[in-house]
View 1 (cartoon, rainbow, N blue to C red):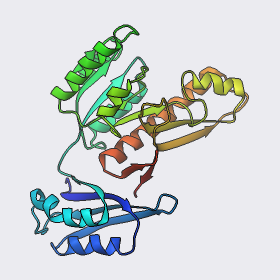
View 2 (view 1 turned 30 degrees about the vertical axis):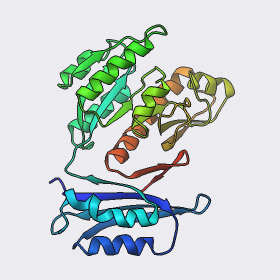
View 3 (view 1 turned 180 degrees about the vertical axis):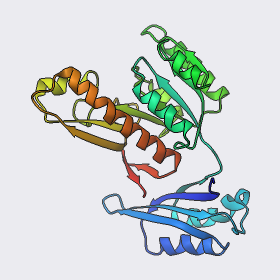
Length: 285
């Protein structure tokens, strides 16, 4: 049974009494708080909080929440947003030729692990069409070259806006998005990089890891910014390797890491567990 809850995410300058202020506001409307977690970053003098409550018995209509909460937010300099569990975010997936992350996302979506809708998949190649269309998802191929990048992104924007997309997942999409594209979806584009960032950013990280003789390989899920592979990190995982592993072994082992890390990052985003600030993230339990 799908739960019916609201989640409030807050960031603001740290000061005494914030937890009590927020809790008292919710309790004034008979909120049954299910989860509450907060973090203070002393170096940034920043307070961050996630609080989730059951909407059953909550006496403040959701459509009136903003007006009721705004005086508290203004007094404390809060940046905040509210999300409802009944709302399924709409996720677009971008992919090139490698299908392992795409397959994993579609499987988790089909079995209900990812509580979202997938209105479309966009690719710059045809390879994944049969897989995507078999799952009943519209598949669009938009070739990208150095000469047509602006036109290709304009077509992508058109499709995303028509589909009402909330966020984008780059499931091994081997193209760099332009700054103007990223700006439209700030902290709403999730990428999987096949390396433990900041090591081996950019292209062919497994080849460079092999050449360096590393003993650990990794994968990193992060939000995309205009700086390549330098956005706020959401999740990472590593695996031990040995001198017996060649480049193909690293690639094969890395696929498992990429699937796991990307699915975690996507699920936490859908569940509104992430607050990004100062080019890093807090992941609430």
